Image (cartoon, rainbow, N blue to C red; front, side, top):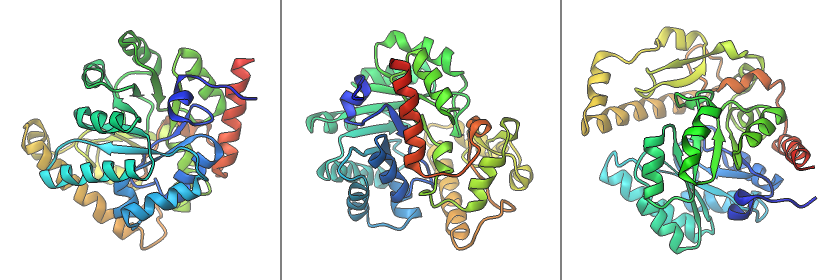
Length: 330
């Protein structure tokens, strides 16, 4: 059965399902497997290079091979925390275009320069948003669609539920992707019924065979209930949804006064986020050297844990969601 909507027409994916960019969980095998199965996997460049240790261009080529020639996307974090980082992201975007990537998701900044580059190459840009004010800035910058991060997402999340977020953003006239809280095919179909053109999954794909996250992390997702998801500001300075384990309980949920003060300043917030980022990279390098237990690490996850009951191959997950999508069109 061959079906399509505006998202699949824009991206070339077989079905409107995204494996969202995840730091640190977007390893090449996972990204490639989702695309090969008919969804679209998104490259997270910092994960690709700093976490999983790939040369950037060769890592993209590996993912393209694993995807079997099917479309792959790229996540451009465009906040200008430093000129060095901004210049590196420009180079990464240009190389991604050279390697044939034509679907981009931008986050944390003004996407105009990405839009200009990608549109010149015939590509598509969607922009991550949590509120209408950010969506309007993305629209004004010329993006082709919006990834709407709701209050059920893992990692960084928004304040609004999926329905309210759709109602606030749909008047802008752009295709909308639901991001957050979907772990089952039933939930996927429900989000599509609201009017979203696609759904982005994160937590569901961490509990996939191809993801190189620790088995302890995967089993924590499988075993967790929705009530086990909490939020902490102590990782990045803004709320992050995580599984409430012993490490998070020790860490606490509120950023300290100094971090809050730094994050309020237009310039100092970049320094504070850099500090948080360096801490995160240090933890990842340490944790990658051993099998995690959760005693001294954090596990990002969303409320979709409620409907995730097993670790299984990415292709199995995608196939189940494909069936659910086709059923809605019958």
